[in-house]
Image 1 (cartoon, rainbow, N blue to C red):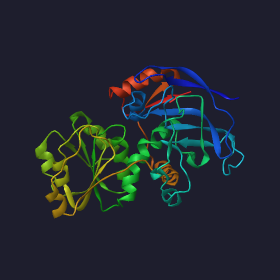
Image 2 (image 1 turned 180 degrees about the horizontal axis):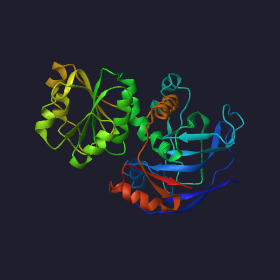
Image 3 (image 1 turned 90 degrees about the vertical axis):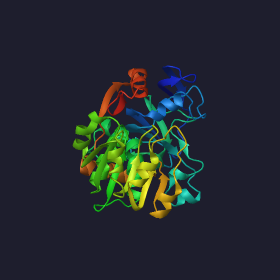
Length: 335
């Protein structure tokens, strides 16, 4: 019997309390990872509060995990004890469906999230399918790599799949946990980057992160002045915006891509979409191979999450600060 210790929530909205569970026998295709770092994502707060109606208690949150392989299942190849790996939102998939066979495991209808109906990363260790443990390049520090495993891949995926290149002009709405990474990745892709934020005091930081331009999104005149100029806008915001105004900033064939969840349903006039053949889409995380690629790009081009560090025992304090959007820009727990 293997007991794993961590910090669990026992009811919706409750505090995290010390908790241990029996992890049973290690499955043949699984690895056990001894956790050194775990990011605190806004999704963790949503799961703690059961905002999405799918939390089961007690459960240990956490899905931006970095650690070292402590044990490998009998059928696992390619990993040895001691390898440093990362685990993101997903811990398993069916491996057989159309999407898994195409390498789009993140679209598998039987995808198994790391901390939904199972225990996640606010703990000493965790077990996942070896297919969803990704080796981390030596050049990346563990604390700044942890947020890349969810926030990083969430913004890297649409830039990559929508063909962003040095001729592209990219807008990023919201300079927070997702947005500060989107700016860096868009710059790495060679794009001309415009940062949109309702916080005028973030201008200097946005430019340091790699944005070429900063626009105060509260000033509709400034937004309207960009009409027809951007190829892609990645919205990381979780607040309602003038979405019609943003659509008008797109060039023909431009795309408004949502990776942040606005509280209200999005309504848009059809004519601006039809007239310039613009698109609206959403994007979620990415496959293990895309995560590995993203980590390699981050290592080679110096993309780093800006983090505030907490001990694992301070998880409640970290979650509280994330809830209040007081962290710049990602909280990371360490054992």
